[in-house]
Image 1 (cartoon, rainbow, N blue to C red):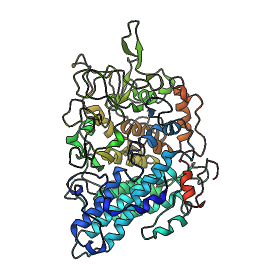
Image 2 (image 1 turned 90 degrees about the horizontal axis):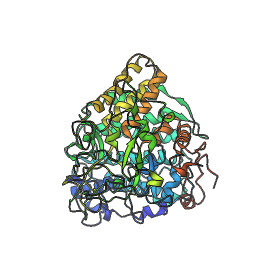
Image 3 (image 1 turned 180 degrees about the vertical axis):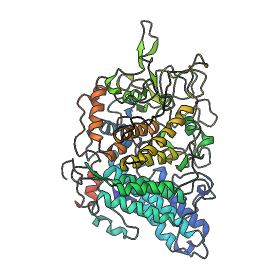
Image 4 (image 1 turned 60 degrees about the vertical axis):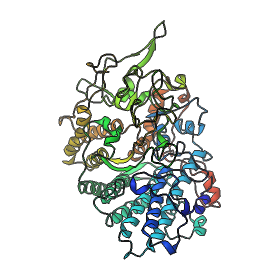
Amino acid sequence: MKLKHIFSISLIGLTICSCSDDFLRNEPQGPLSEANMNDPEAVNLLVTGAYATFGCRYADSNDPHLFPVTNWSYGEVRADNAYKGGGSETDLWEIHDMETAKIQPNNGFLDGKWFNVYCGISRCNSAIRALRKVDKSIIKEKDTRIAEVRVIRDHWYFDLVRLFNRIPYMDIDLPENEYTSVRNDEFTREQHLTRIADDLIDAANDLPETQPEIGRINRRIALAYAAKVKLYLAYEQDPLTNAVVNINKDVLREVVDLIDGISGYDLLDDFQQLDMLEHENGPESVFAIQYSKNDGSGSEGRINWSMLLNSMTGPGCPWQGDGFFLPSQDLINAYQTDANGLPLFDYQQRPDYGTVVFDQSGDYSLANVNGNVDPRLDFVTGRPTIRYKTFTERACGLWVRNSDSYGYNNTKRFWLSPESPQATQGWPWGASGLNWQIIRYADLLLYKAEALIEIGGNGIEEARQLINRVRQRAMNSDYVKDFNDPDKDAANYKIGLYPATGWTQDYARQALRTEMRLEKAMEGERFFDLVRWGIAKETMNNYFAAEKDNRVYYQNATFDDGEEYFPVPVAQYNFSGGKYVQNPGYPSF
């Protein structure tokens, strides 16, 4: 896959794979040209093409499972939250290498991701150039539409910076025949993030507070995204080692101010409503990719192919599943709580929670389940013998394609219940129109709490209240019930609120980082959080040590200095004619 392929993408095919909702259901009727650029329908097609980049399907890169917008592999499997899964270690070996910290520049899934993201940027650039020529007297929403595309473009650049660090910046007006002259070390990480955040804030000035059509980017989305980018920007890194060398409190104050200026959102009443179609555009949804099913655009519609990776299977269940993207035992262990319902920060020194054991007749049960656990454990993971959402035919079974390598647990997040009429009953297993949340309100609460903790002072107490607000929602959610006795909880669920006593900055920092993991597990963010905090090496090596008795393939896994970012793909180095430089931590080209 070569970056050069993106430059021949035509505006004829703008809706290859698009977000859904009504304003995105326009099918292209033919090529766009300057002659018809004042036609409102033509403008809508341009903007639709930018939103369509979230589908991650371009030319010869046609598998959103492998190069996902959700970053399930790049952000979760590469961290301590998930196993690759599948049939064996060689099944998608490229992701296995990510999981075991053996990534190399010739890994095709790095090149594929790079390729897909630059496809998205190229399409946004083309749309912005064309939209600038539109007569505003005819298309009154011109400035708004350009701003929407700018936010999408900023999303993709942010994705690239978090993944690859050293990236080329393709200016909107740069002629395509000059793309090969752009170096990938022209700007630092901080310069990239500054430009992205500033552009998001500037774009917000041309966006309305709300949009009449669900799914369109508005001012609040742009400002929320700017807050997220600035949170990353505040953690200044050594360009040669990627180590965090300073936390800029002035930038963190900007994060707080941005979030304080955003209103109109709230937490859903129940954590499990995050995976229900009727709540997907509810008060917690800040920025979501709008997916749909049976909308006439294909065999299943514009569904989120990136997440159709594992599912519940067995007698009475309409699915079979592929067995990828499975929760780690370490993640399951992290949900354990003490007598007060607070996380056990020393969980890695304790026995594994909820392991599968067999008796002489071959029947199985879960061992070491007498302790307390956060109820989100069984909202996020599918564990054997535990009720799967509202499915009444059977509890979760043992089906994992390779349980010897990957254990027996699967993932409940991002799935509807198997009996739901809104979920596909056959292949693709469990497909639905459930949105993918890029930013939700719980994120903003935790971003603000993180900023306040690092600023220090009186704000630490407000941070405690923000974290407790997220925990309170989990506490008030309907707990999973025992499959055979609906009057009994499926586990000893116990979640408490952090008291003011002992709430020091160091303790608050640990609480925040744990809360971010428990609340956001499997959402594609974990590894990027670790890098932002400067603890990726320590966390991953502790994880490998804790897991190597369960997962044999971790025996020789080691996370080394400089591996916080992926290497620049060798195919892209070749495309640049040798101009690109490699990231620290990897051999030079």
